[in-house]
Image (cartoon, rainbow, N blue to C red; front, side, top):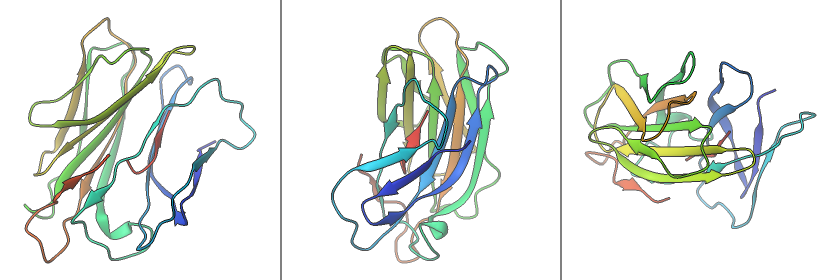
Amino acid sequence: VNPTAAGNSLTYVAIGSILDSDSVRKLTVFRAMGTAPTAGSIVFDFGTQTQTGCVWSIVEFSGVDTTGTAGSGAVVQSDTEASAGAVSSLTSTLGAFSSVNNATFGAFGYPLNSGTGTAGSGFTEVGERFQSSPNQAILSIFRSDNDTTVDMGIGVDAVPILGISAEIKAEVVTSAIAGYRSLLGVGI
């Protein structure tokens, strides 16, 4: 079952969801957009599945294409990747970008209870959240230009890693994505 998200007077749509090779952890990235979202909580719902833990991060972008519904105009393409087993790095590969003005985003999930994820070369870490019992972490990364190889590494023993990347479309009136503020709803 893929999770759903609700809250802040927004409609959340999953752009990607992937399960690890052990069928234990799932990473999902949502998109949402609104002219006047409300303050408050976001609820992640897993239906009838009982969860032993959940780690999430929220990232807000400015200067993106606002056409379409629920942020559909802002996400040009996405990719999901899962390691076949324990690894020390993972790359999520996007196709050629539709514009040099577009930006690159990535989210990675892995079973660690410490901040040991590292953004790939040229990427900025937007945030890293982690918990113990069960061990799980999420790393969000951003790059204000085009990069088809969205990557990260782990500074400790190898673990199974999940990744979702996306090309974020710049609004027509600007030359590039202005930046980020704090993931369009990511949970593992």
